Image 1 (cartoon, rainbow over the protein chains, first blue to last red):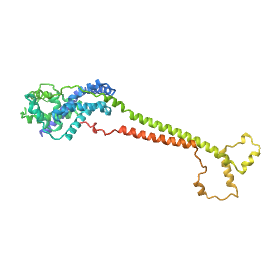
Image 2 (spheres, rainbow over the protein chains, first blue to last red):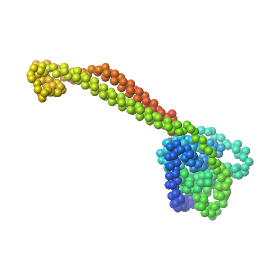
Image 3 (cartoon, rainbow over the protein chains, first blue to last red):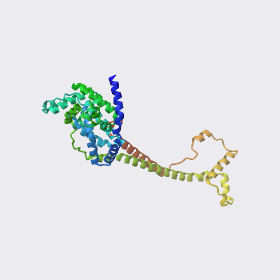
Image 4 (cartoon, each protein chain N blue to C red):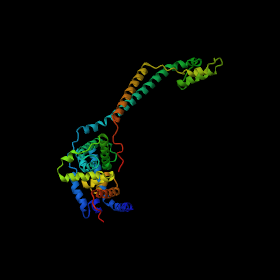
Length: 196
Length: 188
């Protein structure tokens, strides 16, 4: 019952959330221009695309693969994207395209590598804040995939809900629902009491 | 929990979310320069080569076809010229040279051939012919000239070459492996 009410609230809120997304066409036009220039051989424009989307790709990977592998995978993905940019049909869909590549690459990573336990970094880390961050990240990584990715993009990469929706190609409504439900589950895991 | 702050960081900051942001912010992406390989641009340029090869192969094939057709039509004309005087030899045609002929009376060769065939058909003493056997053999035996044979050989080698080029270009276009990103347009 509570879930239903919460969903209804979320959907009501998502209608309000469409307002910030109205500014999206400008950003989309920038993307289209950047992709076009990059395809014409302008490396600086591709550098701008990299600067715009690297945090998103980093967040998507952080929610799926071990932290030590993320940096290299981000570079690999952008190199792959640079080579395959001419296969992109809709330039305005650059964000969703690269997000999908990142998700697929994370799946490939798990397919290729054997199950290992990452302990070395945790044992060596003396910084308590980093250790706590990793602990919370592990909790987030135990959440369902949809919540996990959205929460990492919001809490780790510092992106807002509309930005997540714009960059990943998800609808603002689903991002909002994912954020709300994911945060609720994370709070339960962290042992926070629900403030009424 | 402040929903608006969670959504777009607007309104009063939620202390729990703020704390989580501060802690998890240490894992945030640290910008690193991207080293783009020099080869990539060359590769992109190379992408046009197979298409150029295909276009060139098609042009060669087209040119060869035109040449062959021209030579064939030339050979056929020569053959017709060679055959036509023989077929005109009939009893009536032998008589016509003796009579005075005006320029208006000059009839085209093919018409003469038709008339002669009709005249032969009309003759009473004409020997019966097995029509089915006659139909099997071509009316005009075209003997290919040396030039036509040479042209045919040239065309066949040109077509073989074009086919090889097309195959090569196709292999280049298809590449060694397929595209690993199959569902790139699925969103969400």
